[in-house]
Each structure stands twice: as C-alpha cells, then as structure tokens.
Image (tube, rainbow, N blue to C red):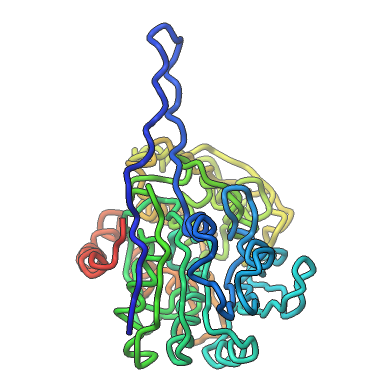
Amino acid sequence: MQRRTLLATGAAGALGAAMTSAAPAAAAPPARRVDTGLDRLVADDFATLAGRRVGVLSNPTGVDSDYRHLVDLIHESGSVSHLAAFGPEHGFRGSAQAGGSEGTGIDARTGITVYDAYGASQAKWAQMLTSANVDTLVFDIQDVGVRFYTYIWTMYTSMVVAARLGLRYVVLDRPNPIGGKAYGPLMTAPYTSGVGLKEIVQQHGMTVGELARYFNAVFLPAEAGRSVDLEVVALRHWKRTMFAADLDLPWVMPSPNMPTPDTALVYPGTGLFEGVSSISEGRGTARPFELIGGLATDFDYHWSDRLNARELPGVRFREAYFVPTIAGQHPPMLNQLCAGVEVKVVDRAAYDPIRTAVAMLVEARKYPAFAWRYDSYDPVRPYWVDKLTGSTRLRTMIDAGADVDDVVGAWSDELTGFERQRQPFLLY
C-alpha cells in the first residue's frame, strides 16, 4: 500500500539579534517559527484534499496560526465535495470534561454532521465512516506526548478501520510539546486499555505523524490485515529538542485540564496520580497536574522537604495547599483543603517527568493514608495505575519498598528497545 510523506525541509529561521552589551540583562531568545501540517495544507490551497469526500477527526486544537479551525477553513474553501467531522474525548468543539463527549449532532457553525468518536470501537468507527460516506479521513489534534492521553488511540482505532475500508488517511502533523525524547515503561499486552491500546512507552517522544507511521508499519498489518494509505503532512523547522514554550505557535488547551505547556511538561509523570485514590492531581485548580496533594489531615510539608532533599534534576518542589473543585477520581477531596507539593520545573532539558513522579510516589507511599485507586468493576486488573504504567511492576516495587533508581532501572532495556524500533519512523 502506498505511503506518502511530505518531508520537512529547510532550516529554522534565523534567531533575532542579541541585545547589545549595554543592555541590563540578556533577552530571552525569540520563539521559533514552525509550520504545522495544517499551515502547509492551507498554503497549498488544500490540494491534497481537492474533490475528496473528507471526514475530519479533530478538536479545538486543530487551528492554524490565526486560530482558524481546519473544518471551518475547509468548509469556507469549497475545495472538497463532502465534509463531516468526528469528535474525540472532550468533543469536537471541546465542551466536555474528562471522560465525556458532546454526542453526535449538527455543528452550529458549519451545519455539517459531527460524529461522537470518543471511545468508539472498531465496529462503531466502521458504522460512522460508512454513514458519513467519506473516502479520506484527516487527523488534526494537538497531542501532549503521553501514552495515556487518549487522542492517539482514537487515531489508531480509526486508522485500523480506514485500512479495512480502503480509505485514505491524512495526518496533519503538530509538534510534540514536550520534545522528542522517550521515557518510561513499555505497555504490556495484559494491561492494554483505552489509555494504552498498544505496546509503546509511557512518554513516546514522537509527533502524531511519526506515531501514525509507526502504527501503520508495526501494528496495522496484523490487526487490519493491511496498512492504511497514509499521508503525513510534515512539520517544517521543528526539531526534537524543541518544547512548546520555544515555539511561535498557538496553544489551545487540548483538554480542559491541560491549560498550558507547563501542564503538558509534567503530565507524563504526575498523570500517574490518577491511579492514587488518596491524592488529587489538582483538577479544578489553576495548576492541574502541577499541584499534587491529599487531605491536609493526612499529608503535610514533609513531602516537599523530602523531595527537595533528593535533588532531582531540573525540578524543585514548593509546599502547597489547594482546594480541588473537580472530583475526578477523588470525590473525598472535592472542595476540601489538600496539602502537598507544586512541581516547579527549573530546567526542561534536565527534567525527567516520570522519574520525578516515581520519587513523588515513593515518598507519598510513606504516609499511612496513601492508597492506590482500586476499581471493583475490573476484578482481574483492579489497579488503575497498572493500566497507566503498563504492568503491575511499578506498583508492586513501590509497595515492596524499592527506591527510585530500582524502579526506573527496571524498564531500561525495554525503553532502549522501543527507541531502536521507532527510529525508522521518525521524521525530524
């Protein structure tokens, strides 16, 4: 099956001139201009979609540098013969909270049908794509680079079905906001779920375009019986060492509790606290996933003191108190005073979010109130943190008293293997 990729070309634009020596302090370097896949599609006047029956899988992040949405641009251009949309978790226009969607209906702005794709099975995807009568499916969503962030699995499932139906699949690539380095444990088959359908590491360090290429070669032939007709409209001027804060690109919240690039930076690690029933990950505060804590009657300032004493690379911890206004998986903490830490990243290049979170878990486990989230609806795999990390290993090692280096070292070989396997599919 043919696979096409528009490869990134050209060097990044020159940086602005440095401040003169008379300046009191050095200026921050100017943000780097990166062209997204959508920017390149617009510049090419939608040529790759001309005359097609197009379905768009997107959410509020699918905007160009002027904050114009892909669907609105296509609709206004008249370049396609038919248009439909598909909304992932939180919905196409982004009005739903975690674990929610907007349902299927008519988009008020464009009048097109929007199908509810959150958590859709392959059978539902087949029904939706057939009903929508499309021959090309376009994916344009800003991912945050973490296995348990669900958009990549919506992409994967739709790719499988598109392959079976013989549809084209176009990915408009966007930067990985936390860079191109991989960290963390590998998913194992017994613990796959909607927060990790396939065997990739926790922080995959790939763009969605690179992931699509990886999925297409590694997983689709076995699951779909063939690869999909894939085209990646690649980024221009992005490098793997770049973070979202380095770039001159719009930041639209990918989900209601991912407000800033700072949130995305810590999320690969502190997202694990969704697997701890006695500790809130700060939902309903101005700093979700940066503020982590449990009831003030159970946790205290010693947590930040012990973490700072570890001198973890690139990060410091502030003693913090907050009141969650969204329960999430932690109803006892709703509207209650919580004590814990604020994660303050001081050196992005040195910071390892998952190793940092392991240290946080190791120290939190010393409090008597600490408890892993236990889901009685899944008696075979009841611990949510096992689904987040890909196996029972992290939980059982921490429960047995293992320290940070032992826990992190346990996945060293599988991380190296994943880095080797992904190499042929990297574009940048």
